[in-house]
Image (cartoon, rainbow, N blue to C red; front, top):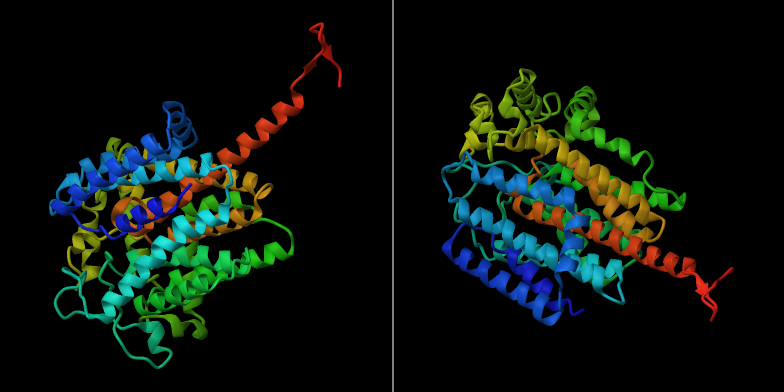
Length: 448
């Protein structure tokens, strides 16, 4: 299958991070082009679509819940339709990717990682760099007026400058999380899978420099730690041990994080990565936010089952209690709880969080299955899932709050499901051929 068309479509979609009429028109063009490509050029059938839906049931249900939360949004500053169009185009892109993986005769899993995931985000990163160098600024900054933040990591290297918010992004943490995720994938592809190409080397350098300029500590450190872990496991011919138990991070991540950072705050060596004196002690004020969020759900209310809708922290009134922490930031009352599980609870309720947990149980189970048949792709995507669990402790990764990251998460999720489906079907097909009975001319089964 020719990958040029889907890759170009994906790159184009990553650049459309706006709520404009033009985007709505472009979205319809996307959908028509993709549907034409699948139905006319590739003869996709209803049966193929049904199989795709079946293997992605938990994921698609989570998307449905996210769409419902958008309709029930608590943010009055934007129209609902453009946001829903984001989901429509994302679904068509995922359909295109799934069909490609499951129906290509000469399939190379690593090739799809590079073309479908690394290339689009790499192009986005390079475009952002180019626009920044040319002095192109955002139409709307996330900070008020002249309020700025120093780049702490670079200052430790003797370079004094403010954190950079790149043009085609939604903010520091949003872009930092997505670049951290793709940085993880690229590092494992380069050093573990041994795809040591000049392009991937350039991408690693670009992602690393981007994270330094954005000044997102976890997005820079997690990929390096995960790479070290995967390299060690590969040398021991093992996969991620007790992977399934890491799902507990979705429930107890804030407690673990708060305990670790509190311990780090008492060690002088870690003060070099602190933004302020109380930074590590309070988890950069996250422990305060999580405490307020916990109080909301300690006293059960029926609405907690389905959540308050998008920006549920505002709909519940809880974010008004922590808005003072974000002095200098625009729309501080909309600021997220800085934890994916809490964000899902506020938006989609317990139903949403249970679905998210089930999805991760499914992904981890399928990755272990894939590991027995295609280790390179299992290492790559296993590293990303681990990054997602760790980053989700301190960031809001659900829905289109972090536009680019959510696209990345969906691409990886659907890719894992599609690779699993392909491997499982291939094995079943081979087994059925082995088990198929042979008959003599008289019609009697021949014992083999």
